Image (cartoon, rainbow, N blue to C red; front, top):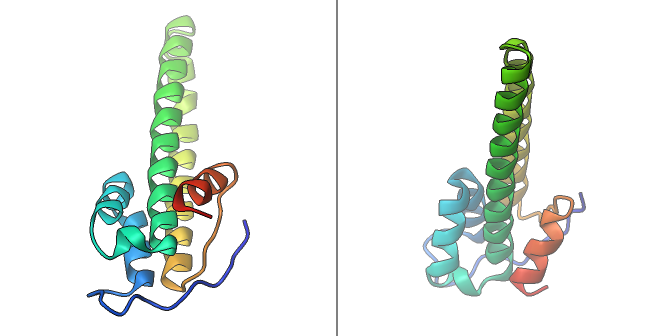
Amino acid sequence: MASAPTPTPAASSGIGNNVAGLLCYLFGWLGGLIFLLIEPYKNDRFVRFCAFQSIFFNVAVVALWIGLSILSFILGMITKGLATLLMFPLMLILWLGVLVVAIYLMIKAYGNQEVKLPVIGDLAAKQAGN
């Protein structure tokens, strides 16, 4: 994860770019989508990066959750429920990790620091125009 400072907020905005970036992560894919559609944030590279990274991160989390749920169901059927009981703590740890990463991204966005997550960050930077 690399950090780089970003420019100051746009002059015509009601909220600073750092707060807009934080809100992208706070409201997940919906927050990212909103900030990609409204002026002046849709033209700001930092906010666009945060929005795309938020969308990609949340899509990846949902895909991982669906995959693990299917795996848990299949293994639960094979082991008559034992694997489902073992997967529950794993899912809790996964959600705790997702929460920690989301809070970390919000803190960094509020500090006007661009943090690239592995794979997702490069895709977001490409989409944001970097």
